[in-house]
Amino acid sequence: MAILIKNIKELLQIDEQARDFVSGARMSTLKTLKDAFLLTDGDQIVDFGQMSDLDITVLDRKHPDLQVFDASGRMVLPAWCDSHTHLVYPASREIEYIDKIRGLSYEEIAKRGGGILNSARKMEETSEDELYNSAMHRLGEIIAMGTGAVEIKSGYGLNTASELKMLRVIRKLKDNSPITIKSTFLGAHAIPLEYKGKQAAYVDLIINEMLPMVAAEDLADYVDVFCDRGFFTVEDTDRILNAAMKYGLRPKIHANELDYSGGIQVGVKYDALSVDHLEYTGDDEIQALLNSETMPTLLPGASFFLGLIYAPARKMIDAGLPVAMASDYNPGSSPSGNMQFILSLGSIAYKMLPEEAIHAVTINGAYAMGVNEELGTITKGKKANLILTKPIPSYEFLPYSYGNNKVEKVMLKGKWVIQ
Image (cartoon, rainbow, N blue to C red; front, side):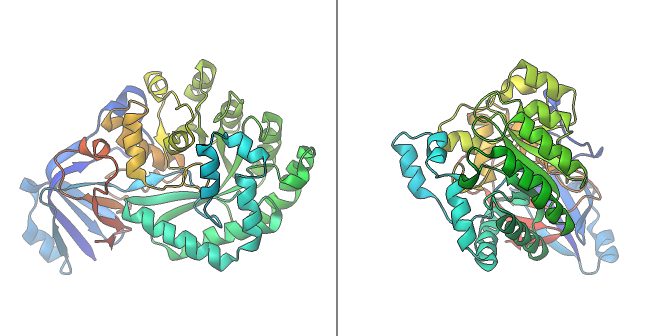
C-alpha cells in the first residue's frame, strides 16, 4: 500500500547521498525541505519533494490504493535510532535509587551486591514469558515516543542459562515487534559474586562456553564488554573480543564511564562498531577515534540520573569526530527510553546545536547499531520509519521543549503504528 504525506511544514534529515554518518563541523548543518511531500510504498520511502512538484493525479493512477495524510503545520523526520539499551530486564530497581539519593555511588551499590548483580539474581527467577511481556510493553512505550530502531543487550544473566534466556527473548521481540531490533551479547557486564577474586575464570566461561552457544543459536548481532574501573580490564576485554572474532561478532563496547580505562583504545583496536558512555575521553582517546570507523556514542541519560560528569561532546565534535546519542534504557542507571529527552540533553548538557543533536539520534545512531544503510535519513529506497510531529513552530523546538511528547504519529516499515 502507498501512503502520501502532503503539506509537510518541514521534512527533516533528507539525504540523497546515503552517507554512513555525519561528523565534525558537518554536524551543524541539517538538510531540510519546506512545504514538502513524502511518498512511501510498501515498507520503503520511494519519493519526496516540494508540494509545488507534486502531481496527485499521476499518483492516483499509479497507486489506486493510495492513502493520503495531510501534515499541515507538522514536520516529518526519521524515527529515532537508539543504539544502546538494556531493555530486557526482570524488575525495576527503585530501592537503589533511594540509596543514590542518600549518597551512595554506583560503584558502592555494586560492591554491596546491588546494581547489575541485583538484576542477575532476579533474572534467574523470571521466566522467558515474563521477560518478553514486560519488554514488549517497554517497546510500545518507546515507539510511542518516536523510536524506530533499538539495540538490546543481554548482561543481566551472568551465567550461561540466563544469558541465553535473555537473548532468546530478544530474538522473540525481533520476530513479533514492528520496531527494528539488534541484539548484543553482554555476558561481560559484571563479575558474578561467585567469581569474585576469580575474574579470569569468569572470562574463561564467557569464551569457552557462552560465546560458542550464543553463536550456535545465532542469538547475537554484536558482542559487548563493560571495560571500566571495577569491571573488566583491557586484558579481559582483549581476550573476549579476540574470541568473538572467530564467530563474526563485531564489538560494541562500554568504555570510560568511570575512568580512563583504555576501553576506547581496545574497542578501536578490534574495529568496534561503537564505543559507548565516554565520560572520560581525553586527547589520546579522541585521536584513536579519529583514525577509526568506530562511532563514539554518548549516554547522557546515565550521567543525568547518576550525577556523573558528562562526556566532552563539544570537544569531540570540534576535533572532527561524529557523535551518536542513545538512551542506555536500563533499570539501574537510566530508567527511561525517551529519546526525545536524550535529544534535549544533547543541547542542555553537551551544548550541541539542535542540528548536531538530531544527527546524533538519527543517522549517527543508525550507524552505531549497523542499520545506516536502511534507516536514519529520509532517502529514497530506505525503510519508511518516520515520525510525524504534532504542530510545532520549528525543528529547534524538538530539543528546546523537553519533557513533553511532540510525536503525533509513528510509521514503522511503511505502516502507521502510532496514530
